[in-house]
Amino acid sequence: MLLHPVFVRGNPLDHELELTLAKMRDSADLFRELARARHDRSEGQRRARDLADAGAEFRQDEAAANDDLRRRRRDARQLEDELQTLENRIADRRSRPVTDPGTVLAVADEIRKLKVRREELEQRLLETWQQANGPVQDVETEVRREQVDRRRREQSERAERAGRAIPEIEGELDHQLGKLPIRLGRKLKQIVRRHDEPIADLIEGSCGGCGQSLPPQEAVDADRERALIVCQGCGRYVVARSSRRTRGWG
Ligand SMILES: [Zn+2]
Image (cartoon, rainbow, N blue to C red):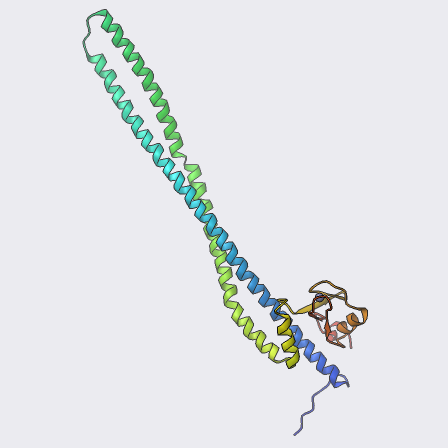
């Protein structure tokens, strides 16, 4: 039994071109998807890397802050020890019995100086403790570090997701290109070396890939699916986004 193709209109070439253009549209969608997935993968990787750097810097800052904190606490302990020693000396001076007025005066003067010194130490200790505690800043740092880590994970996942999708899209695209006339499929593979998306949309008489206006007749032919048009500016095929049948031509 001989099977005759069913033509919508009388001209079999017309019908063939229509089918080819439909396959080109499907291919264009896949090229677009592939380009997006590749962009997502590289962009996700780049951002994850930047965020990892930012996170490392944060951890360095945090380590520096912790060192500072430890130093202040050590200073505070030293001040406390010094204060205790002073208290002991003051108590010791007071407890010693003195008789001659000269010694009484000398001891009183020494105690006064010790008290001044004690006040200084107490003030420094207070300041040291105030700086060493700073809990508000610690919480903020922690929250920001978690945000950076979370965003880095999100970007890594985005890159991984895109990376997994790429071979699937490539397989589908290969299959789709295999359905096109051999020479056309080969031509598209050549163009794709220069442009990620070798099939551009026809946008108001211009190539959607590079923006160059098509010669008026070519624009009309592309729009009415009368011919396969190649942009003289960038070498991409220029195809109307939807079939003329869905747009009411015919
Ligand atoms: Zn172009």
